[in-house]
Length: 79
Image (cartoon, rainbow, N blue to C red):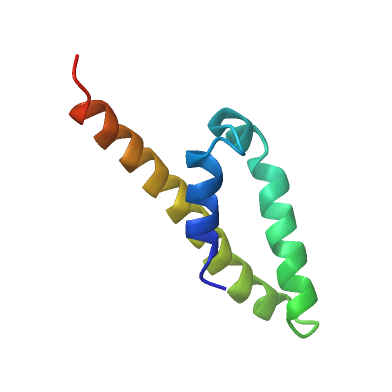
């Protein structure tokens, strides 16, 4: 459950997913997260939302870690 930040960071870092493509497909990602939450929770919209929002947050955390790493790499690279 707590692997989305690592998987997101790795897929962006190794260019499995292009950052621009990921930004374009954000709506589909949210839909997929809510679908996954629907499948793993009882048939209750509140529980689905309580599972989906942290998953979405963890995904966005992975994206933020990637951008922080890229910013740090640019700052430490020789000009």
